[in-house]
Image (tube, rainbow, N blue to C red; front, side, top):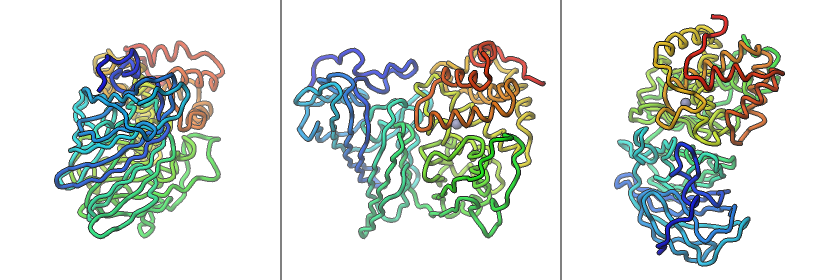
Length: 469
Ligand SMILES: [Zn+2]
């Protein structure tokens, strides 16, 4: 067991908002997770093998990890000493790891996974009435696997899960194997793209599996098969759009309502690809739980909705496009640290407004005016480029983020604005992003300094007037 206090930096990512999540001294390249899960008793028996690279010489390694009984820890195949203290697992290999070396950490563990309590509520692995879900943003990942829990340490994954055959399993990744062995089924998913820990998800339930085509989900309805004309983004229309396979896991009782509520998702994918560039993953999976959820949540190549978000009347269609937009903004382009959260939520909000206009609802300009009026009535005490940890998910970060983009569009004009969005998603595809990088790229596309503009819109709490209003 380790008795010495951790060296400075070893147990912290240095994240200005969530320094206790993430650890220094190494980066994870790949996670191999083997999970055996029993739904009734909520029992997880698992192993995790992390392939990591030392960024400095290491006599020990810290991981973020929840409350499990740890049976064994190996480093490069050899038993290692370890100490579980609070939310950290400290591992001391038999032999120090040289800077630059690639090494394997293997953790065998068992327990009843439960969510991480946070200021944003319970996040991570949670039981459903009959199944389980994982929704980890921002700090829930250690509730089910040992990890370097920081968005900047993106890695690839292979996840194997064995559970009762009566459950449908969806895990963020491409399904590569499904082996039915009598009463249990083994599911294997691979996630080759760099993925943040908070975007890994496991979904288990008694769901119907729907295979959906890329263009129109339900050809018999004719939805999504007709061509339509974009009213904006002139000059940025791709002639070839990627067909994105879409699947869904839906409770049988909600299937009909789901088909209507998500019936235009194929068109949304078309629009977003035209505006933001190619869809970043091989497929898109929707999970609707049989339980209600507070909010839908994005995962890598996936989004999870509650039963309460499906009513057969498209009441929550803006959330369908919002979660879809996160595949570009948040999932492919991931915040380098949480201060930059508006780069996720402002863009997803603006995608809602663009879809509204595209689908014959209110134009983006009308939604911008309406939200400008509403935000103006609220206290002006949030800097959206650095809202503070307590306000990361404040509505004002979302709506002012959308307003900032709308104002930028007015400031630099549609051709530069939409070219910028595509360059932004293209240049940083599967990478990390900061507000400073976005400002620099916007200035390059505007071919002039936008200092004063961004100072008003990103760094000043007072809400500036909306251009053209
Ligand atoms: Zn969002």
